[in-house]
Image 1 (cartoon, rainbow, N blue to C red):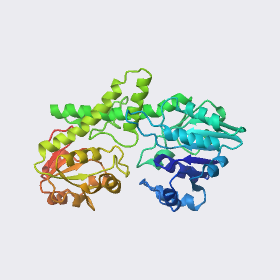
Image 2: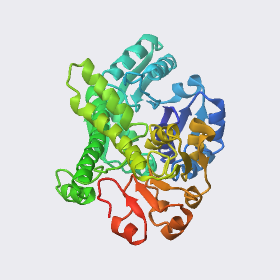
Image 3: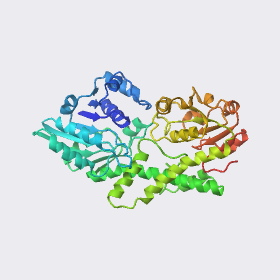
Image 4: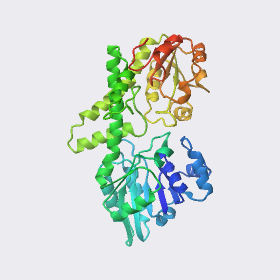
Length: 431
């Protein structure tokens, strides 16, 4: 097939590379010449393990093409995927202006014959019907099309594996012909097929992300209980997670969730609920606990750190990505700066992105050891693998005071005590 992806972020670029790798001709349509040139040269722009190799391979094979021209890409395509951002407005509602602008340009350039226009962007219920009406207004007279919703579930850091081996592939459309084409395109991929209507497909993505965010906030709420009661949150959640109805995954206490999906999708689902007249207090609570988890780390720093120099390990919202959107680190850095702390940071991938946003207000270091040189405390905000088995004796020697505040619970408290650290983790009594 010949297909087009509009947008070359985490979803668009990863998925485009994989479908090109299956032998399809894949156009990737963007609007920034500098970024398109970088992509043509094999630079994926974003950090995602394995993506650079996949990009280079398929560009060299001539299967992956980059353009800023709708006229070049759309008429030749059997399927067009919209994979642009839907950032939150000030009130939390999803900003759909780019989705609608893209849809109009797609509609104007549809070929004579049949095209599937499938939205992978995360959009509120009813959006695809609006996309359909918009395209109907502007399309050429002899063009035929059907709209579909085909949400993605890839995680940054494991995007390639998640795309190749998903738990499910959701295809929502009112058109059997559109479903057939999308089923055929996805045939090489694993995962159970879920064939449904447009509104159900739109809700599936929001519901999935809201449920995962709820599990994280619930874990943090229980961590608050454990810290007050002297219990161990990891023991509690390990036991709770053994219940097959619950499971342990995403019951992860710490400094809260961030990233490009959970924060905006929870807010957007709250706004959708308000428009529909639904009580959203459960989701309001998820957001509140997430904020409290970040504030809790600030309270611990103010209580335990006897000095004004802090080292931070981990800036990205999760490991194996350079994405800092809504990352807990940004909140903590800004709060600590406002309180007069000097901050030394290290992250394997995200420091350039943080520097663009925060500038030279903090000290960027070359490695994890330099980040703790002379600090009064170390805060761990992202659970990168390289931190888990690092030489802690070397870390202790470099620090002015051997105090670690662990926002991701990557070490065993008893081991840390035996090594001479004051170790304050999340939801676990200090030993």
